[in-house]
Amino acid sequence: MSAIYRMALLAALVAFGAGSHADTPGTLDTVRGFFANIDSLQADFHQEVIDSNGLQQQVSDGKVWILRPGRFRWDYLTPYRQQIVADGERLWSYDEDLAQVTVQAMDTVLGATPAMLLSGGEPIDKVFRLEVQPAAGATLHARLTPRADDSNITEIHVYFNNGILARIEAIDSFGNHTAFAFTNLVRNAGLDAKRFRFVPPEGTDIIGDTR
Image (cartoon, rainbow, N blue to C red):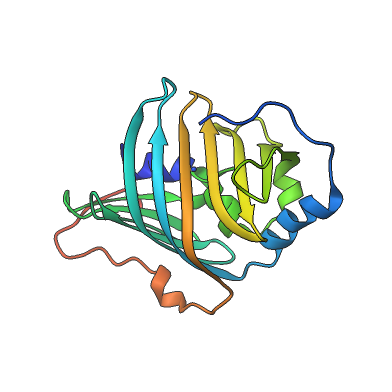
C-alpha cells in the first residue's frame, strides 16, 4: 500500500456498535474543544489497515508531529521507513527504500480526512457532522461524517480517554478501515517549523511539481 494512499485515507485511520446516543452538548464539546485548541501535537502512533473483507493488510508504527495550520509530518519507522510531510502547500510522500518522493498540492489530496481533522484550520462542525456513539473501551466515542459529498472518506470515528485523543478510525468508500492508536501524545508544546520542510536526499526520484 503506497504512502500517498495511506495519507489520503490516513486511512492520513472493526466494526462499530450500532445506533447512536442523543446529541450531548457537553460531550461533543469535548471533541470540538480538543480540535479547536490544537496549535501543535506530537505522538507515537500504531496504524492498522483492514480491507473491506476484514483482512489485515498492513501494520505500521511511527511518530507524528502536527503544527497548525496545514503542516504535519508522519515518520513511518516499521515495517518500512517512509515519510509523509505537509509544508502548508505541498504534500511530500517519501519512500526511503525506493529513493522516491511524490509531490502533490495539499488541497487536492486531503479533503475531509483525518489529516485535515488534525492539522486543518477550519472549525470541525464546518467540515463534519458530529454524533455521539456507544463508547466501548473509551470514555468518549464520536462519529464524524463529511459534509461535502466529494470525499472518499465516508466516516471518521474518534475515541477519547479522559479528554485525551486515543484513537482515530476512518472508513473509505470501498469499505476499507484505517486505525491510528496514539500514545505519548503531547499538545501545544511548541514545534520548530523546520521540521516540516522536506528536502529530497541526493539521488531521490521526484514525481510531481515542486515549483
